[in-house]
Length: 408
Image (cartoon, rainbow, N blue to C red; front, side, top):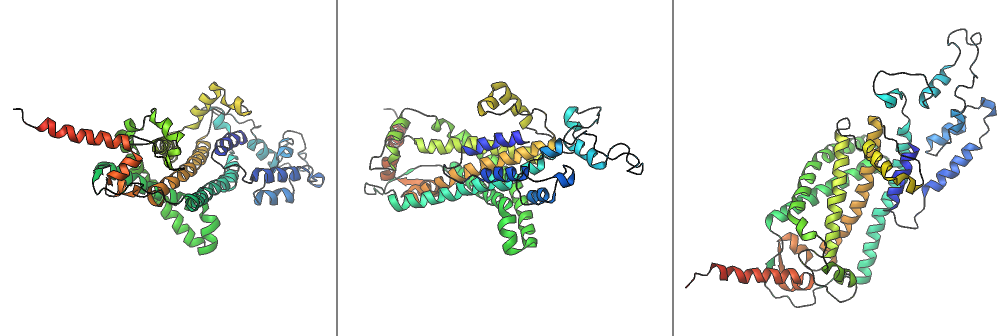
């Protein structure tokens, strides 16, 4: 499980701003301190310090326990009153935990031989430690950066006077799909954050009973709102994918910083380069969230990571990260632990992207909300932000009367 945690941490590091404190440093220090614990009085077994360290969520090096497997330190039969044979209960359970037992199974392979799966503790420590810490920093850092940007740049205004003439930016079905996707994602994000941070913030404030009720309701909402989210994801992909294929005009948009920095307003088609980034982020990350969510809803029917790790091993990805090959045989509970971790990681990243999208579509840009509000935008706004698209719309409007005019 430690190898899997390293792979997940490497993925999460891509989405974390540089300069944040790294909890792993403190954990490594705790592990070093645990390794120095004097265990001579316990015959090499764990001490009270080890138990308390685990309860505090610190990393405890358990190599001293592994080393005791099969070392013949069990009491003799006479000393045990002849009840346990040649080994003690502690040795039996230690062997079972670390896979040094003599269990045989008729089916299921090595995974089925694992009677005690202690990877849940590694998953829990990752969830409560790096995942919650970095994920929270990412969201708060994104909000702080947007507030700072607004204070420095202000709202992006329309330079030209309003014409009073409007053009249809998005049809009704497009706005329906967008708002269904947006509304469901906001509910999914909020309920996901409640599940992640409820024990730390809700329980101490409102009490454990209130926290339990809120978490239960959040779970029901989260599991059911996932379906309209996935439906809307498919709808916007079908309707907008052809408009979001990168082209050469995107290079101009990037070169001029999209008009966000400075006074230039680069030409763009229906979607500019920045909107294309949002679109593909939503499609790819939203699709990944959906797949991992389905795996969590149907854990025994849709295992994902064993096959994924096989492909990654074949491609040599673990070697590039400096770790050993990833395991290709996983128990159902291990699949769920990994799916939940990945689900949360990608969810945090997509939430940060959507927060920036909400900013631009509301207070960040004058007239932007009208595009998804009424679906109609002023021609001055369209000319400033999507001039190529506006020219195409006007050209079609001119062609339509000519095509419908009767021949003489």
